[in-house]
Image 1 (tube, rainbow over the protein chains, first blue to last red):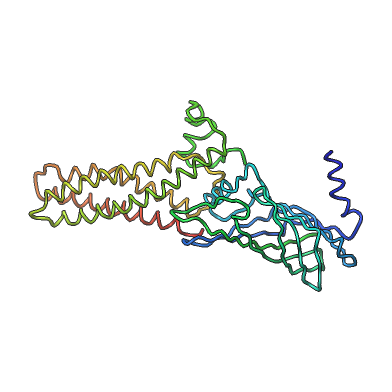
Image 2: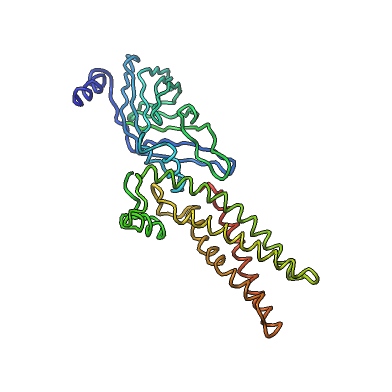
Amino acid sequence: MTVRFTFLYLLPYLLFGQTFEVSKASKITYYGSHYAHDWQGHSSVISGRILYDADDQTANSCSLRVDLVTFNSGVSNRDSNMLTNLDAFQYPDVMFVSNEISVEGMKASIKGQLTFHGITKDINLTADISVTDGFKAEGSFTILLSDYEVERPALLFKKIGDEMKLKFHIVAK
Amino acid sequence: MYTLPDNMPLQTKLLWAENGLLRKTNLFQVDRPRELELRTKMLQLHQKLALGTLGLMFAQGYLGFQLQDATTNYMELSDRHAALGKVAFGSYLTSAMLSYTAPPALRYNRKIDSIRIHRWLSIIHFTGMLALPYLGEKVSGPHDSIKSRDRALYIHRGIAVTTISTMALSALITFLPF
């Protein structure tokens, strides 16, 4: 069963375009806010593949996955609280999958699904891309933690902000 | 992620490590996700109680300085200072225990961060807080000279100011983003 799913997953990459593997040079940063201070956490442990076909845009796709535990904000207590509130034991990763990537010049419009805290939502985003020396994509988008039914951690009497910006810098070879 | 972090603080290790007191005695048997929920609740309560305690400590300090210059109302102020001291001490110990005995976090950084400094400062104000009731007794106790009373007062006041300042600093540090 697993073999069949793996094969079906890889099939489009095998048949069309050029497949790029996400490298360790990639980075995803989240920006959190609270009245006491704003902070950011990042992860460079991203796995996934990008299929890019300059001639046939319908073949473009990507699949990215990040383990929540790899995000580091520099304060272990905060990271620990975030993981607890994200129910990381139950939902250990965040995934983004897209089969609709239209490229115009150096800009890509991406329609995909973000799975976070066990909930999948459609998101649209734009990215600056470069296909010289591998594949690079850079951009940002904003999510609402409430959309993903995340109970927000609190410091003193106030919860952290509902809005969370995510910035991505994907390098694939 | 399910495993316990190996670099947890000493007091957490004593209670919650694989061979910790709570594991060995089977006093507390829940799975790790529930432990983390409990940790969050304990630390939330710790924050609120600690803030209240800090307010009580400032009030206590104010009363202490008034007591120092008191003349006719000395006994009244002294009673108030002693009573408030008991409330502040109880509140402080409850808050401290909520933090010291909370289950371990999912991970602890090896580098210095605001929470680590917060923990180090707590050693200073915890020690100060334990000493203050005794030092207070020494001030109000019998003295064979004014000099010996002044000396006891000087030590009590010094430790009190250090304790309150360290507590305030410790609280402020948690607001830092790093």
